[in-house]
Image (cartoon, rainbow, N blue to C red):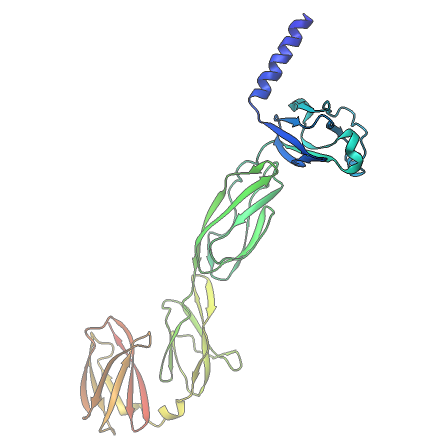
Length: 351
């Protein structure tokens, strides 16, 4: 009966070790190679070392002091090495030394973990964010994980090795991913797709009129010199009544950003021409406008689109003219009338 039990245990041991990995530790002189090895629970370790060396498991305290007192229940090989079976390699760190050479630091460690962590569950956090905003993303802690690796979309900033991260977005949408790690490896990545909303903060300038290029938003124009909002100036366009430095705060899709400042220094020139000097009709129109002027006999006109590009120019020699923009796209345009070093700006709309 005892023989049968022994044979069964032997066959079980052979079968069990056959499906796991056997790692090899050698020696180079009075050094174990590798000095530290990471294995998975169920793996074996084979010491293939010179006949003058053995491997004896000791406590961490003994290991730190280069002692050689055996750890109760720990493994020990013969001189020349041998196989250490999984039953002797439980979870955790196993400290071992060469008995006759421990005093000179011939020692090593075997770190046993259960397996690489499982894939993290769903990443929690905002899936639509504003450019330049700070947002926190997190996952439920993964059993057995000792650290986490986060990857952010291009241009984003933030770093963390815990199960949460605070990230500042760029203008780029993309995926946030995270893996769980331990000494046995890393999990598959969990991913979250994030969309970045950006506000167009470019401004077109024509004469003394500034136009925010992002339509369908809310606006607040302000004086850059005092960083004070201008009362009542909440339209897409702003016409300066005094020379100064102006910008606009644009809010759209719950995102807010501020344009650069623009210097206006020709308000005094424009005031030399009264509004009755020029009449444009119909306005809005389908692209053809009639232009009537008084008190001006000769000058020239330039028309700019919202991108600041000049799309029309002609010289006027009589009080009545026709402007044809039917080859342009629908939208808002700025007309500048120049006469005797003076300029008058009008807004015209094609629909």
